[in-house]
Image (cartoon, rainbow over all chains, first blue to last red; front, side, top):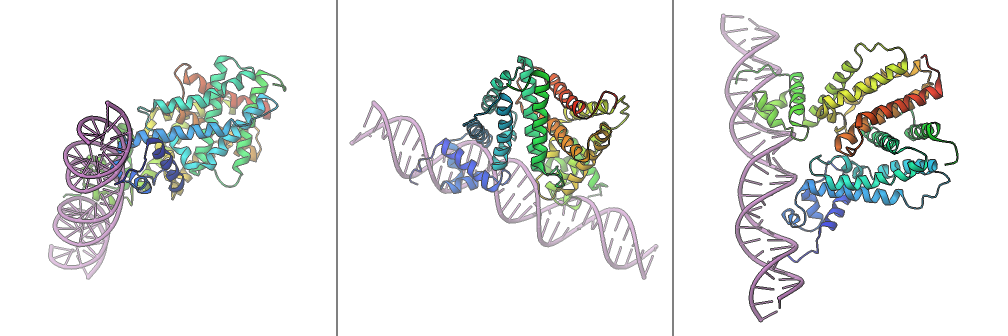
Length: 192
Length: 192
DNA sequence: TCGAAAAACTAACGGTATTAGTTTATAATA
DNA sequence: TATTATAAACTAATACCGTTAGTTTTTCGA
């Protein structure tokens, strides 16, 4: 009955760890509380509901991803930067597949904090695209395009919708290069 | 206690209807059996588990989508055909948002029947891309690219990750046109 | 030192999918 | 047509799940 020094952050981190190990679908508050050495009901002193917890885990995933994506990205051009972001995005998703799932599995209701964290990740794309020469409106369009492509690829691959005949890495490179090439063709030359 | 003439197909269709009405997350076997005028346990004479049922619903979604996508697609060029498929894909997903979710929410284990139905939908893309002049390998690559883009866009939009400042329809057109333009630039002229 | 607040607990509720065992209705067979 | 076997309904129970209410214990601040 001694206090365990629990708080929201520790719970969220332990939950993320548990999800990473056992999978998103196998996750339960019961197993989480077991691991924290506490009864399930005690969690509710720190969290208000499972869906709120899930949202917090999604935010954690965004933060970790952002940290991994934008550390030491020294590239020759904005196009190169874009390429490395795209490669890093998938790298993170493949290294943390179950954690990545939480990002989009949030119930649409009340996930505004998560959406905000997602926006942070997105906004950091904008300067890169601006440096490529895109207009304000096209920055939005292209940002949505490449995010859709990356996320869709990861989701479909993970779900098993790509056959095994052709290497997925190769397809991903094809996709990203296709999008960047279209950027070069439309908006500028080689040296951005 | 009189027999209700129930079978797997009727259950799957009723489940799809229920999901369309109440949402994927609100779905339960209890409400499904209520609607069918039967006790929940009785469903197990026709289905083996919820996840199998979910997989069957996903297959139904694929079939309906395929039917809607490929009826009366009379286009001037293969590029036009591709464009209309892309627009129709999103149209279906927006008209049947909850049903669309079932496609990808299937547990990866044992969903081989569903994967096969998905492959059918994919394979019907191949002749179009072949007519555009793509090599066998690039057909796979580009097919994965556009499927990723379409699916990712729909998922991110539905989850609320696109702001409301810029119209999503416009972004979707931008995305599809960008991909088709890249196809024209790489593989051929105007008249395919 | 005492009182209040926070954090643990126990116990219970309503919900879920699922299984086992039983009865009934239909279909096939003799 | 009568009988039997099979399939489809049922009842009842299990083991989870998230969540809430109410209680006890610990800790911290006045």
